[in-house]
Structures are given as structure tokens and as C-alpha cells.
Amino acid sequence: MPKTRKTWRQKLEEEHPEHGKVVDIPPKMQNRFGTGKMLIPKPMDINALINKISKGKLVTVTQIREKLAKDAHANCSCPMTTGIFLRIVAEVAEEDLRNEKREVTPYWRVIKADGSLNEKFPGGAQAQAAHLKKEGHGIESGKGRKPPRVKKFEESLQKL
Image (tube, rainbow, N blue to C red; front, side, top):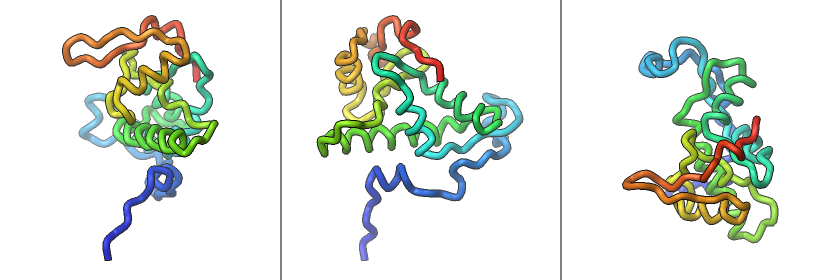
């Protein structure tokens, strides 16, 4: 019998025994993060943080990771799982938009630390740019292989 694929919403809401745990920073990651504790976040915690971003404001993935880690009394939050769960949040929001839901998680307000857009979001950086333009943000084209960036993004950063 073929295995049915989980929906993005099921992935978002799924309880997993490793999610929400604070673990020792793995040896392979200690060059980057040092020693101490690392949070393996929960997808719903990322979703909740993104829902706190006001219209016209932005946060960076780094801010999200730092806030999650601080709230869990950890030194850092796992960058890999945070990125994966951010993508899941974005996919759920796009599903909700397609289903004509009025209130969706504004994932497009999450940018990279340098102000660049996320190519892994649904529709790529172009779709994220379209959402951000609707909220009044200026977008500058990427140069070479670099993705587009939000102009003067520092002025729009929200504290979490």
C-alpha cells in the first residue's frame, strides 16, 4: 500500500519527540557556535513568532533563531531545522492563500541577515518581493547570483 504524503499543515502541526528539545551543540557545529546548548525548535513556535511581525515590519532568520534560543535558555537554535520549519510555515501560508483564507502567517516578512530574500520560499524571491512591495518595501535587484534585497531593510526591522 503506497504511503500517503503529509500535507504542509500536517508537517507544521505534527508533534515530534525531538522538537522543542535542548541538546548539547554537536561537535561538528562547535566551530560555528562554540560549546553549550542548542534548541531544536518546534515548527509551531516559529509560526507563532512570525505571526507577531507587524505589517510593514521585517525580521531576519537570525532574529528568529536568537529569540527561540533565548526563550529556551539555550545558546543557539539549530539553523537547519529552523530553515526547514520556516519553509513549512511559508508553504502552509501559501496553501491558505490559495484556499482564500484571509488571515495567514506573513512569512514573507522574514528576510536573511543581509536583507536578501529567500529563494526557497514558495515562488522564490520574486513571490516574496511581490508580497513585500504590497506592504510598501522597496526591493533592489540581486547582482550576479545574489538574490534581491529589501532596500533600507534595517529601518524596518522589528524587535522580537
